[in-house]
Length: 205
Image 1 (cartoon, rainbow, N blue to C red):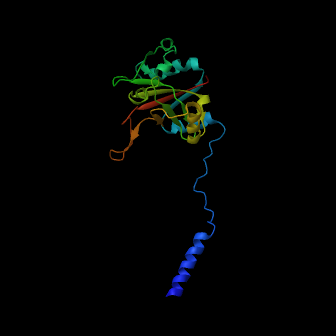
Image 2 (image 1 turned 120 degrees about the vertical axis):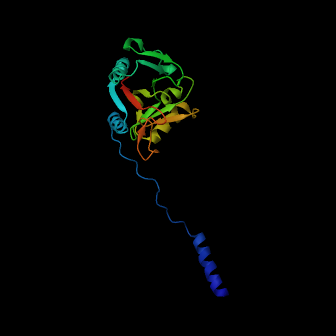
Image 3 (image 1 turned 180 degrees about the vertical axis):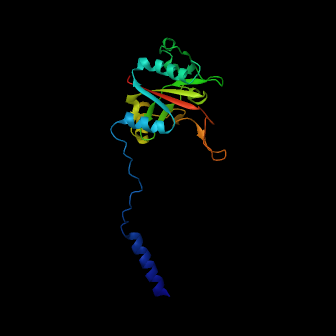
């Protein structure tokens, strides 16, 4: 028995002292996004039921939004981020108030920190001048997105956040099209937990 025991222990010791075998990488290859990030983002966002307009000049964004609201018989009244208060909404025929959203607001207009071409997702950071309620409470969420703020992948979005802000804000929101759920009889329903519709206006400035 002692010989067998010693043989077993010898094999265990040899295994523990041997150099570990190289482990295969568990990371999956990154998906191909392509060089045209605007086209890639727009295609993916539309597949997620977002409406995408542009790119247009930043000065034309208000007219695009007004036309969208008019075509869908939505009110030309909106709540917007305080960071967007200086835009000339009245010339576009939109009555806009810069504040946090209330339950009675039907249209909310925001910017975004960046957008992710791989998934068609908007990345928004909460703050005093970028309240999260504006993108979450109204039935229609309108987002202004400069094309220079489109990155290829999720990893690039986090890297940009670390570079420009250094630390996380109180909340980071990822928006991939209108709110949806299939909890009720496995039927997809839009607007169950947030906006029914999302409009993304791409701008060149």
